[in-house]
Amino acid sequence: MSAKASNPLSILKTHLRAATAAAALLLATGAQAADLNALIWCDHADPALLQPFEEANGVKVNVKEFEGTGAGLAIVEQSQPGDWDVMVIDSIDVPRGVEKGLFEPLPEDKLPLADLFAQVKMDGSTVVGGKRYGITEKFGYNTIGYNKTKVDPADMQSMAALTGDKYKGKVAIYDYYLPVIGMAALAIGKKTADLTEADLPALKDELLKMKANAKLVGEVTASQTALATGEVDILVGGGEWVTAGLAKENPALDFSIPKEGAILWSQSLAMFKDSKNKDMALKFIQYIMSPEGQARLATSSCYWGMPANTKAALTDDQKKVLRFDEQPGFLARAQAYPAPNADLDKKMQDMWTEMLQAK
Image 1 (tube, helix red, strand yellow):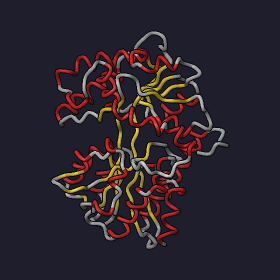
Image 2 (tube, helix red, strand yellow; image 1 turned 120 degrees about the vertical axis):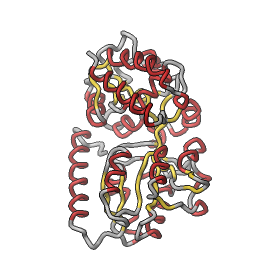
Image 3 (cartoon, helix red, strand yellow; image 1 turned 30 degrees about the horizontal axis):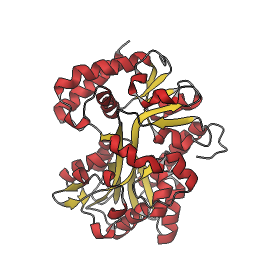
């Protein structure tokens, strides 16, 4: 994101709309120049990430953006086998793609697995039946984002601040039920991996306390904008993905990993088994996982995040913004997204809807 941008979030939205439209047009016209087709999150659409790979390999990477695993899998279901080569997916959702028979096992001896932060390898989900189908490329935290000139940073070291009276009306909540329910679980001393239906009443009570303090509940752009413009001073569910990319424009924005912990998000790359260009698909994955590719992905214009590779070629300033050296302590306190079964997931979504509708 340009440091000279007067309204970075507005420019970001315009850029993303243009990039999505261009990618959709390219795919719709069946352009013959396409060498690699990638289903991606918006951070992979950055030309600063793609151009070095394209130039080095003499290929064109066509991208189609989506948000959320469900939306990505729906695109695949509407496509023909072989239409796609690689996909970005929530690490915890890799097994869903494997169950559908979509992904090709990755050659572990050709990937820098030994260089990854141990806590984000996510072997419990990226390895299925003894074979690796995904590799973690980027991670971060759903936690507390805030303006350190408007709130006491010491207060942000505990989730109790999110439900106390001190910041009433100064809070926004990120509108994604799983990580924020995870934060509510941490706030009441529950482990995200152990949540059951019996925990729902206590979780709902905590969410309603957060909602009572909130000025708004919004999706990515709305919640980012509210914090960046000063409409609110705290974002529940925020983190480096909100604050790091805006650090040059607004150095007052920061995030904390409170004593109760944070919710770890992690995204992986997978290769489609029906890819018509598996050699180039593997080269792309290797590039993204290289120190140079990791640095470019971590600092993408769409959103920043921690590179999974500890050897990412970040500058000292970039590492400082991402709080690279503090990661061991952060990871030690982080817990994974809740992973409910279908029945509990529906009940959690219903609970979230009730929270949204509460006055």
